[in-house]
Image 1: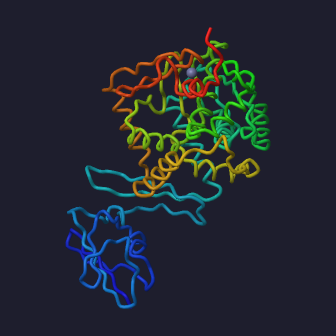
Image 2: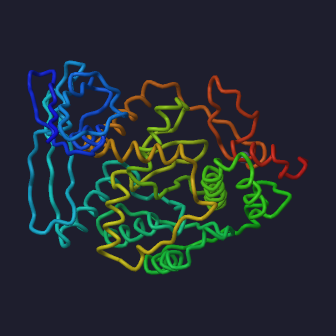
Image 3: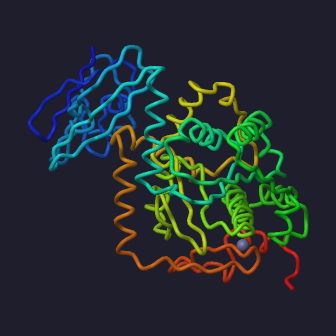
Length: 405
Ligand SMILES: [Zn+2]
């Protein structure tokens, strides 16, 4: 029988579960021990952890290389408020003058929707994502998050500030029309008395001065070496069409259905790129105030919420070629998800930190794109396109833009 022990830096010796035939990487992973934190010997001989399969009588000794307590993530101190037959546990790491404790509250099928709704109400009131008297245009993709947002509004309206809402959906790409969820969005708007406006592919072609139909432009981008930009383009197109609609109505508030892990993943991207980004959960960009009313609710929580309140709306197809992002996007989401597991409530900490940082940063400078008119943030030290947003830059480099007047 193989044996594995961890000699940690706080004087402890712990036995790690290990089986013959297992990879050493799996032994460490299952024990919550990062490879970078240790040096390892097998039968007294130093090894590179990724090169070892455990043999029948191996003795594995894992030495922690730095003095800190791995127990904070391997076995954090915990307080649990249990429920019978829980469907979800909300955990948040509390930091009391440096002492950490994970507090977890469980919810059953009946209490879970109220939990999400109370978080939502708090995101709106204390997060100031919707204020009394606001007139708002909401970007409605027809995807699950925007549907969940409508559902939450529907069920909490009497406890929210008084505001008026127009929803805008951009149609025109085959992938964008998830007929089931799209119809659900139309129905929900109707029930809520929300005006639902539709922008078409022709509108997009017009705003971005494309000389070919929008679908053709996007198809060419997907087939090119710029295919990684496809989701950025899709978002920006939606954003610009919404701004134009808001402008027409004299509305300055624009709400988005991005959730907590979307925003946490964008902070991961920001952390690794350093590119300037507007505030969370409210950002002023050009003439518009953008808000993220779902910023305290994760994708998992939204999905579970729909599953328990409107299961029929939870069925969504696989992403298509215009709604699939590059590896780098997946990396940001994966890091955000792992981080939430290691540091429950990391989103709360990161958003507060980011808000702090907004206070000491230079005011956000924006420029207007010469083609679509959208505001963009020029990045210091990055030789970006002159006077063009990223999207119009891609379109014009690919010669998809009409000659300028
Ligand atoms: Zn542009």
